[in-house]
Length: 229
Image (tube, rainbow, N blue to C red):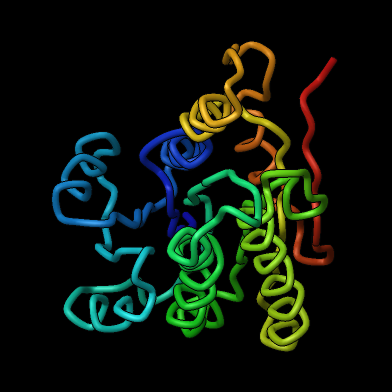
């Protein structure tokens, strides 16, 4: 039985992944931004344990965890949570840049740092659910893509730094996926949203599981997932 810490388990890809992990009997730790959200997650996933920490304020994660029990060993840390705000670089205020960088890049880096002892103990696996915007940038996506390019750099550095400790690192780059975030993106783009056009979150979850379940003699470093025809 493996132990996993998942962020963003409240909806979309994170919820689909947590469903799959729980169904096969794995132990779940779920990150929640506050106590109310933690209660909702425990109701949604009976038997799961929760950690409370605000990804929007990564400098306080260490303090928050010092007042809670944390997993002594982790087979996987899976970063799914993220936020998106679109807009031209010339019209994007500093607060918007900082918020996306904090939640999408700095917080995953800090959470990984805090959980590395538990990951090293288990020779575990860190999965970063990135985005197609972490590979290519389109107009109006500058600040979000910058945060996702940063995540790619974090993952690539971490992979080489932790190879000797037996910690594997995978980055998954999903294309447009039928999640609440994608619905928000369509609203910002002024486009009609049709979930049937996009990837089912369960399909991305299946991709993550393929990386997690790969035998120890191999490592999937990067996976790109795109909507089917």
